[in-house]
Image (tube, rainbow, N blue to C red; front, side, top):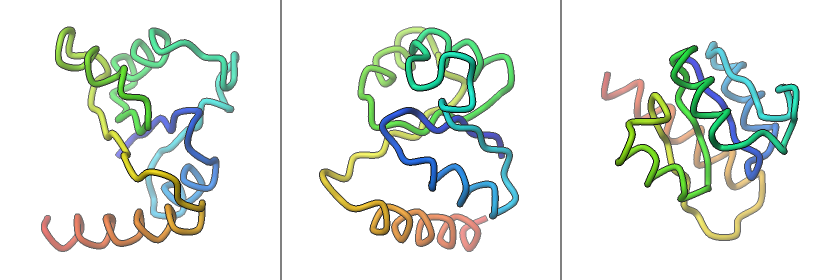
Length: 100
């Protein structure tokens, strides 16, 4: 799968997804870095058919109203460490592959 990891999430998530064989980029990899606008992220997501992974609930409204981004994975965990986030993502990845 192809992903864009948004600014509120650590680059480690991008690295983890890449290690799992996915094509993942972080907003830090884009020209405007973490200042990339939601509009630009939506455009890139549509053009490159990337799933946006974010904690930013504004993307939900955009997705429901205009079907942008291409696909959306909203992470809502509260305050957790990067290590805990990585563990949650590992569990999610394992469960997704088992369901497939």
